[in-house]
Length: 173
Image (tube, rainbow, N blue to C red):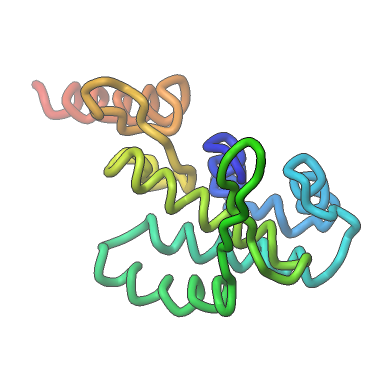
């Protein structure tokens, strides 16, 4: 199963750099590297990359915009990624373990969706897009008060605070 860090790296693979949206996973080598790091085949298989990109895009859609719009847009894509997948219990000496029954090229994409579902269940309301409208990154708020708004205080937080300050300064005679 993928951890929270792996989920966040996948969700944040479409940053804005110098004002332009980028898709780091457009480069097959980057997707293959992520897959290798997380026990995927990472062999450059077109199908594995296609499923990973589809899962990432669906999860990003599920986390952005209004709940009604994103739920409707993301649901068919998530259903496609999860179609026919079974999670089967296997008893063993160490207790019960769960095994995914899915084609090898789709397994990592399914694990990505399951990691997202796990975060949503364990930490409700803590996974969200950055409050900077020019940013396309996501954050997982681990603060006690659940008040984090930016992917990074150093970049997005400071920029927005500086803009608000400049706007207030211009308004004051």
